[in-house]
Length: 328
Image (cartoon, rainbow, N blue to C red; front, side, top):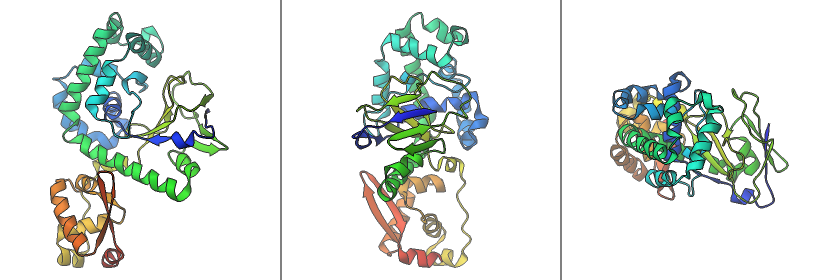
């Protein structure tokens, strides 16, 4: 059991974020064990032809066989939605001793280090330059244009859900609701380690101590997990809600009367909006462009069938009472 101790003001500085760099690094777990991530199989099939042109040797070495990754590869976000290029610049400035310590903590023994890492640790700055270049190429070749917009929509949906839980049920319920491994009790967030496959050098108790905890959803974890090094500012990664929708096919529309009234695209959108969603999320689920979805949403909104709310740059749509009645 790992215990995160919150002081009087620590809940006020607890925040959510998601990280393109984190998801890029964590996605390399799929190359080790694709069976653990069935919702990523369509994406894996698409990118396999491109992997041969990348630095495959170093990319596959960034994740250990037990799926740990060095903490320095996923720097703690400084804002809720950091830009990938900015995060990569932060990674490039990692001190050489942190690079070496990070790989040794991840692989646990010198003998377990992959040959490319064992050789590279003779010159940590050169290894760091090679791995950041490899991640940059991997991001632009395999992730940025097709995969990331879909993943980002899921992560945005997760953050919106957590915000609603916080507003309606309070911080204790929101924190415990991140994962079944977590419970909240009297100022302590308890993380069960009973199903961890590999024992790690975590302390039994980690004080937040005014440093703020950052909560990060991911599509590549089966349960909540902390950083390997408990001395770093606290970060807790947890499974994103709705991650299985990544491989969903567009849902069928079976209500003939609704289709005849609205047309198939608008009927499908109205049925999907039983839960609030953004244009990008809906485009991902229907496998169409956001522009096409936006046109149909505008018509449904003007007809009084949808409402919309804005959070920052994200506009989320939901059915109105009239829309609900029509779907019934």
